[in-house]
Image 1 (cartoon, rainbow over the protein chains, first blue to last red):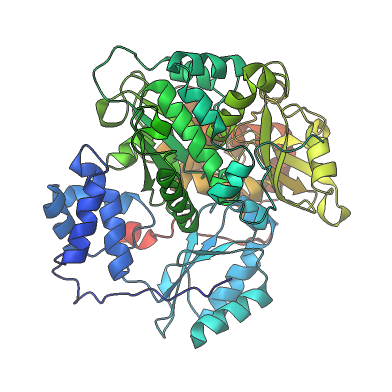
Image 2: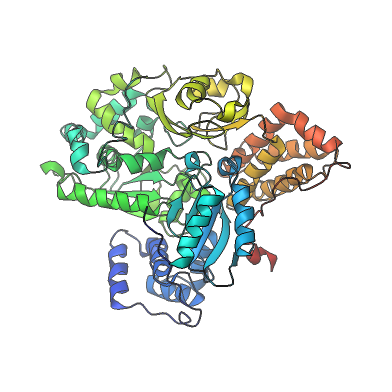
Amino acid sequence: MTMTSPLVVASANEVRDVTFDRAMEAQIRGILKRYPDPGAALLPVLWLCQDRWGWISPGMMEAVGQRLDLAPAFVEGVVSFYTMYQRRPPGKYLLQVCTTLSCQLCDTSALVDHLKQKLNIDFGETSADGLFTLIDVQCLGACGEAPVIQINSDYHTDLTIQKLDVLLDQLAGQ
Amino acid sequence: MTDPILLRARGLKNSRSLSTYQRLGGYSALEKALSTTPAEVIDEVKASGIRGRGGAGFPAGVKWGFVPRDTVKPKYMICNADESEPGTFKDRELILVDPHMVLEGIAIASYAIGANTAYIYIRGEFVDEAQILAKAIAEARRKKFLGEDILCSGYDLDVHIHRGAGAYICGEETALIESIEGKRGLPRLKPPFPAVVGVFGCPTVVNNVETLACVPHILEHGGAWFAGIGTERSTGPKLFCVSGHVERPGVYEAPMGITFREIIENLCGGMRGGRKLKAFIPGGSSAPVLPADLIDTAADFESVAQAGSMLGSGGLIVMDETVDMVWALENLLVFYAHESCGQCTPCREGSDWAVDIVRRIRSGYGRPGDIETLHRIARFASQGMTICPLGDAFCGPISSFLDHFGHEFEEAISKASSMPAKTLPILPVRSDRELFGR
C-alpha cells in the first residue's frame, strides 16, 4: 500500500484571518452548483478548508459563514457536531484508533497501551515532536479487518504491535 | 452455495471498472427500465419483496410508491452510504468491489420515483471509497449512463457525492437529510415522512447501498426471480458481515434464511482458536444479543425477530467464551453515549447514565440496585420515548445482555467489595473531553 502522506497543518497565526484564493473560490462555486440551497454547501466547504489547512479555525468558520451567508455561531454549531472536523491543529499524522466492540474483541487495547507508551501521550494529545496525534474513534466500518487504525485518510487493518511499530517508524522517518 | 449475485465481481481484476461491469451485463437493467414506465419499475420492485438492507427492513418498492406523483416540486433520491452501525461493513465492500452496481441501482431508483438529482451520502471516513464512486460517476457520465439524456431516453440524472463528517446518527434518514442541508444531524419527527417532505422540503427517498445494488438484478431477472431466493417474507440474497472471534471474518453473501450456525461454522471456518461460542449479535450492535444456544436461528427478518433480536444490517458480531459480558455492554454503551445527538432527554441522559452504571459494575463498585436501574433506563428511553430509534438502539443491548447474561452482572455486583478494580482496559467516553472538561 502507498505511504500515508503527512497533513499540511497551518499554525493558528496563519489562519487567524482567512480569505479564499481563486482556486478555492472556483471549487466553492462548483460545490454550490450541486445544491438548490447554498447552506447545503457547508459540509463540503468545511472539508475544503480542512483539506487545505489541516483543521478548522475560528477564522475559517467566520469566512465560511460569510461566503455561504450563515451566522458564525451556526457554522460553529455544525463544526462541533461532527467529530471529524478538527478544531485545533493536529500533528502531521492523526492516529484514529477504533475502540468499538469488534476491534476491542481483536485486542485493540493492546495497541492503545503500546501507542500511549511509545508516543508518551494520552488520547487527545500530540507527541512532543509534533508528528502524531492520538485519538479514539467509534466504529470505522471495517470490522472484518480488526483491529483498525485510520491514519489521516488511510485505513490500516489487521494490525499487530509489530506491524504498527514498522508503520510508525516509516512515517516518522518520512 | 449458490453463485454470488451482489459480490459476483469480487476477486476479478479491475472489478471496479465500467468495462468489467458491462462485460458482466451491467447497465442493461437500466436500459430495460428506461424502456418501461416508472410505475412498472416500482411494480417489479414491489413484486420482488425486497426489504431495506440498512436495518429497518421496510419494503423498498412500497417506500418508492409513497412519493407523490402529482407534485410540481423536484424529487430527490439519496443513497445512504453512511454505514456506521458497529459490526457492519458490507456497503464499503460493495463500493470497493463494484461501484457501478450501486450507481445503476441509483439510476433505476431515481427514474422510478421521478428524481433528476441523486446524492450519495457517504461517511466522512470513507475517503478512498468516495473517490472510487466519484471516478465511477465520471466514467458512467462519459458513456451516457448518467447525466443528460441517459441512453437517448430523454431522462436526465445528476449524481453527487456528499461526504459526512463523523456522526453515526446521520445514518438515520432524517438526520442524513438535515446533514445534506448543511445542518447538525438531528433527526426529524415523522410524519411527515421523507417521501413527502424530505431534503430541501421536497419528496425524497433514502435507500441503503445494498438495497440499491439489488435493484439492477431485480429489473434484469424480474421480481419473481428475486422473490424465489431466500424465504417467503425475507427475499433475495443478503450480505452478512462477520466480525469478532471467528477464524475468517469478512463479508459473505448468502440467501436470506441461512442459519447463523452455517455462517459461523461453514462460511467463517468456525470459532477462532477452536474456542466455544458464548454469544452473538445478529444484526449490528443495536440488535439485542443472543446466547450461543440460539445459533440455529435462521438469518431472515422473521426468524431473528422471533428469537428476540433483529436482522438489522446483517452485521454479525461473534463473541467467544472469554468475553466478559459486562465489559462488552459497557463498550457498546460508550458508543451510544458518544453518538446520541442530544436532542431527546431520555436518550442523551439515559445513555450516559447507563455507561456510568455498567462501568462501575465492571470496575468492582457495583451496587445492589444497579440492575433494576438499568432496566428502568431501558424502559425510559425506548419504544417511542425518543424522536429516532437511537433510544431503542441502546436499550435493546441493555435488556438483552441482562436477560441472557444477568448472572454475570449479579456476580460482579456481589463481589464488588472484594474485587480488584481496573483489571480490564478503560477507554474514555469522549475524545473531545477537553471541550466538556472546561
